[in-house]
Image (cartoon, rainbow, N blue to C red):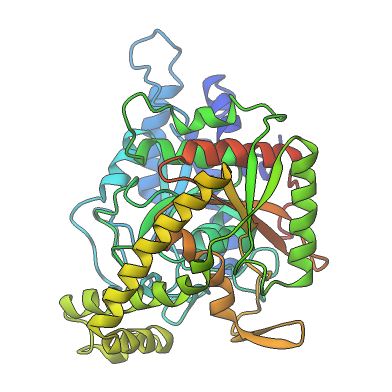
Length: 473
């Protein structure tokens, strides 16, 4: 296996090499650090690279996992043991700066790890560094004014999506084996789709957000980005709050037949009102492939879908502004924010109390409507394009669809905000590529707390429509 093949191997594959003592965690970590040094100047996917920490963690993993089973000192912590991953830079890491992509926190070094970081380290993961992102997670481009824009590995002139853009770019480029990001309005799934990787937003609350710099507490979620569904499940298992007798998420990819007759709901509102021809064609081809292996498609109606975008804004804007006011940063340090984030914080200050409360009421009604729609139609999940467009160019503020210009940010959020507003889990899976060679994502939106079901269905789709291409770096 060449170094490039090894860089794009799955977590399961490198774990097998570790346990056969054909590869060591130290060797693999050195390979990742060398790739970051060589390739990341093109991508700008990392803000901080923690080389010394990563090598120390890899050496510890090596002394545990590479000792023959049964001998003193042997310890196998599971699938992530010795595997190099990254963390979005709004997740607290003790002794390592956590900037949230901002000028304000440029020198902030937390005293404690976020609980999820502790859990990942207990699982044996090796932390390579902190990934670049949209400032304070408040945007979908990862065009960061303080640390520079993150570039899409499929086309360096284009955005990777955001706000977890650095995580998605690094995973897609083989600069880590997975990453943990955050998602408030699509910030895991949007970059996953635009970079051609898997991104999972769990049910709200299933992965605690303690130790994560908030954007909108009622909408914030934490979840994995990876190159395969199985790898995403491996990353999710250590950090997920699991019910009694609930199976490991990673078992979802081993217990599901390709011919399972699952049923998918096709929403008749919102998702297909505005979509590019390329994305629609690829999505329809994907649906046909799913039907060929036994899936059934049924139209589902949820009239309140059209109101989710505005309701999400009316919740996220004031909650974000309130946090920044409490922290003493806004408006006192308004000039230290990027222009786009500062303008959104100003909008948040103008949302009335009644506007906020009305949005919360609509949220409650939409949650009820979504659950009733899933139950009444007996569908396992909704299926939609993750984004209605492929990756836009950096600084592209509007995007044309059928001779009409739309705000790029609104387009990218459009298909993702409903899952945040309702709190249900959603996953984006690589679907195919446009004629220009840009990735397109397919999104499954499932019942509350049923991440296992989503992973099972996503794994089936991955088998039916495997994506073997690598970015042209």
